[in-house]
Structures are given as structure tokens and as C-alpha cells.
Length: 210
Length: 210
Image (cartoon, rainbow over the protein chains, first blue to last red):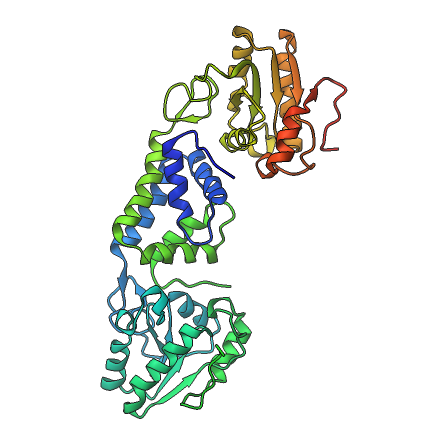
């Protein structure tokens, strides 16, 4: 459908929304027209809140999760097991795993996974800071909880090799989570069980992506 | 799923996105995290463009469609048939009908339809301005192209009664468009045909909503 917009202002706003993942031109127009019907102060609140997040966002100095303070709530909770670190891709996975109530350790948020196609290499991720944590801390076990994709596999092996010299246990969450699915969409029971049933990770590990 | 956000800034941004129609908390988080990964100038461009639309949007003085100028492109096009006016709910329907290439008249954008549940009455819509156009102009026919819903029916009958004194033809687009569907989602061929096959509208007209 060849769309001709009656206004450049409208077209620009639609194009901005359509840049967001999973939002096409038709949905974008619907969202823009919705905002247009709202009071101006509501639209200001919408745009201000988003810009404020982007400009003022902080990350925990330890686990690199999004946080309002320098050391996040989880990392500063002394009742948690600081010898156990769960490696995840992003804040969404921290929230999903926290919701299972099956994990009492700490997290390490990579900020992505290794993906040559997207130009994301190990140095773009929080991998050396993970190594530092393992080197300097009392870490006994690192649990890998990345997505069951080729990129997740690559990242798992990369981290495993980096951590091998430190003689700690490296484990991976049990694959109750369906192959090809992403961590954040797993149901809480399955995800919780896969945290409990984590298995040792070594060279004999069979990648999902084959 | 009981969500606990690691940051208030993040939670606020997610809540703002989740106010948009058809966007739940999970999608909102995904969109917010996407914006968070973008360069700051891209996020500024996103928020500025949306705020600019809301603050600077103009409507055509004649048909009330969104427009960058006082009289829109369609209303100022002298090659179009100014004796024929198509009444639509919103800019989306103008765009959909323009795309059929089957309509050479002008439009009148109501800005919604009569909906007591949402507190929208005739005075909230551009109905009296339609009456003024019919009263003062050389209008020979008004085509009703509202959604086939109870609200659309109510609005059709309300407009029909308002226009009865002026001895013009009032027609309604042919119902090739499926009952219950909304105008903007009809395919171009069906929508184009329903413009061509419009039928006279009077008291004997059978509402869709029964």
C-alpha cells in the first residue's frame, strides 16, 4: 500500500515509531493518532520520560544491570549467595529469572551476545568485567543463562574458555526451555526448573544450534 | 507475572509505552530497551518529532483533516469534484480511500464517531461544520464512509437527519466491506468498489449492528 500522508509532521512521527522493532507503518500511524488525541501534557510526559531514561540511565558497577544507584539492589543484598553468578544477556532476563524465585545468587548482565552479523564482538560486552569478578571474588560457580541460539552458543563457549583458568564450576541452565526460544518468553515453572537443574559445562557440550 | 523493575526510570518509561493501545508491559519493555540501545541523538529525534507533531499539528479549515497548511492539498485541488463530500472518521480513512483511486470528491473528517460509552457526542465531532459546508456550498451528494459498527450507524443516522433539510443526496458506501470490520483494514479493491457502488440512504436503511 503506497501511503501518502496529508502532513509532513504526521509522516515524520509515523516514521519514527515505525523504526521501533515489530512496529509497521500501519501500527505506527495508529499509535501516533492515539498520541495526537491525548492532552499535550500527557504527550510531554511520554516523551520526557523516555528521554530522561536514555539520558540518565545508570548501570550497576558490579553486575551492569540497569539501576538507579551505583550498586544495584540485588548486588547489595547480603542475604544472596555471592559465590554464584548467573550470566544473562539483558535486564529482561534478570527480571524473568527473579520472577521464578529459584535463584538466590547474583547476576552478570553482558549487555548482548556475540553476534558477528550485528558487529557485536566480545569487547562490546561485559565479559572482561565478568572475568575480573571471578578473578578477584569468592565466586564458586558461574551459570550461563543465554538464549539457545547460535549466538548464545558462541558466547557460552567464549565465556567458558575465558573462565577455565580460574578453576570454578561453569554450568548452564537445563534445557527445559525449548530450543530456539528466547529466555524471556519461557514460562516461570520451566525457567525455574532449568535454573535448578543446571548441568556442568565443558568441551563435550553439544550446541543447540546444530 | 509480577514484574519488579530494577530502576524507576526504566519502570516509568515502560509504563508510558504501555499506555499506548495494543502495547502490553512486555512489548513496552522491549521497545524501551531498544531505545536505550540507540544513540542519544536518535532518541532525541524520536521524542522531538512526536512532541512537535502534537504541538504544531494543524487541521484543514475546510475538511478538518490533518494538514501542514490552512487548506489541505485535497480541498485546494480544483480538479476534484467539490459537489461530492465523503464523510470519514479520521485521517486513516482518508488515506485508505485515496489509495483506492476511486474517489475524486472532497472529504469531511469528523474526528471520531458518536460513542456515548466514550463520552463522545455530536458536539465533539465536526458535524455542524459539515452542515455549514452543505448549507453554504454547491454540495450535491454526501457519501457516508464510517465503520460498520453500532457507533457508525448512530452517527450515520444523526448526520442523515441533520442534512435532510438541504435536499441533497445522502449515500453510504456499499457493504462489500465485511460487517464488523473497520474501514482502514479493507483491501483496496473491496474498498474502491464500495465507493463506486454507494447506495441511497434513507429511513428504510437496515443498520449493520442488528
